[in-house]
Image (cartoon, rainbow, N blue to C red):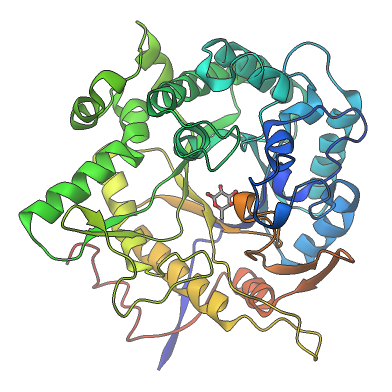
Length: 455
Ligand code: FCB
């Protein structure tokens, strides 16, 4: 027996991308260099020596891409602005051609009845600002707030939803501790200070944007993966909790409780950040929405992350597929922080997709992944989580950071030699989900009224 699993009529189904991962045109029409341009041009940093120089050539093909979004029936599209495209040095002179590009993109989206969700910073800092110390320099907060205000002034009449940062944890730690991402530094104390500066910059940017238009919806996108214990021992539970407190809660705490989690502060010891009077009030001001990026979970045992978890399935990123943990995490975030309405701003999976001789891309595992996660999201809503929308990562295959083009997350396949886009089966399936605002599901897998996250 099946029943139609439905979502609220105003639920925003969308897809997400980021400027550096899709735009290309890295040095065209007056764009400045970003830290990702510099990093990807440095030998040995990116798999196969790939760069985002051309990527999906979206800068030139955005009209075609919006037409494809329209074909899918997307209600919203999350993209980021390349800061050095609009302000080549990050401060000072602006680049009119860069602004024009985003103007045209927004107009194209609105004409197709697709709501633009803008992220101001998805990792491509102007290199000129890195040369002034990058996020380790507190002055960046002011530069960022000025940039946010400029964008709000330029696009705020048409863009209602603005996220300041994408994944501050990744920016701070992958960029400044593990060095896997630009600017490729390896200094934990610096990374913790960078995380603090990002939070302060977020607060200042929200204020600056509200100064331009008090009705704008301001938010931030946090990367949060649930953490489960392999066995239910006190030690494992304590370790899992420590990981939660030092990672996602390190950001949720300041944003929603105006303080860093005490156990995490203690753990960082002399690496704890320099916090100035007034910072926490700035960081914790009211937000209109919270974006959550989530893909997998971590499972711990005996003080370590276990991989592989016996019996589990993994994606091409080597990320475990386990949708129920997402529901539990959303419920926890709701209970611990009473956040504003939530959007899943990224969720999806990489698989080794190929165009078949029949011209199609058959990706049943992505359909299964998305269906499982949508189901858990719906269950979380039933638990009381105020989830307003869901952005699949990603609209199209793209430059996956240090993995180059080797990981395909798209609903659309991209042939990088010809730039041809092909709708994968998952895209066609997603279009049906959007059109029906749900899908037929077996009653035994979805018992919306009885199942609870913590039972
Ligand atoms: C997230 C990033 C996004 C993409 C996905 C796979 O951490 O925000 O740009 O790379 O992972």
